[in-house]
Length: 119
Image 1 (spheres, rainbow, N blue to C red):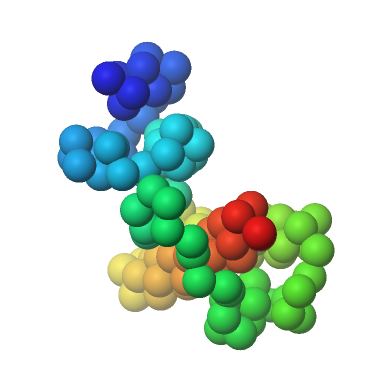
Image 2 (image 1 turned 135 degrees about the horizontal axis):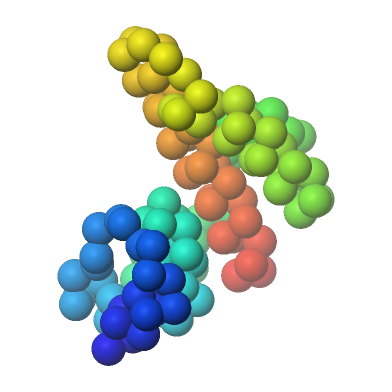
């Protein structure tokens, strides 16, 4: 029922609908983030588990020093997301390379911001 309520609020959702088990394991905030990000921000854990701290690779993917403040993280993510967004690239090889870089940046951002929200 929670997913149906979210889909009513966001009728343009075109991502994969989570299974009932996934929906049950995700918190309301995680489900809302998943729907409003069009399926991009997918919780990688079950409710109640704490995420591991971000790794040096996460900070490197965003081109930041360890422990940068939230504003710097957000600014770096937006800059790199625009730079590597697949829709901004043409040609199969270039688009595939950009897609992988975009996924790496999105995963790093989610690891850093998600961990900061739990601490």
